[in-house]
Length: 130
Image (cartoon, rainbow, N blue to C red; front, side):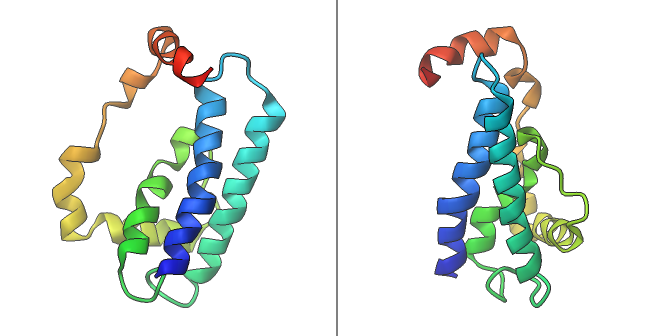
């Protein structure tokens, strides 16, 4: 469990977070930087895909590792990362989403993503990122 929790915190979070920030909020887009973060995120997704070939959940049984990784995978599109061809990862994401505890929390994490679009939001967050 700890291995997969650390995998999320040291790998997926920074890489997917970088893809998200550099593709959405940094005013001067640097394509190679965005692509670098997206490629690394996909590489990490492929590690998850391989792990899920022998288990339904990351550590075998559903655990805090799945809870930590799920929100990132769920938001893959927001960072411009495709899950095409990652069938086991997509199935895992669906299994986690269908768990009763996750269903109960949806009102807390189903943000209106449209509030993050547009120039006003970019202006209001630009000072934080510089």
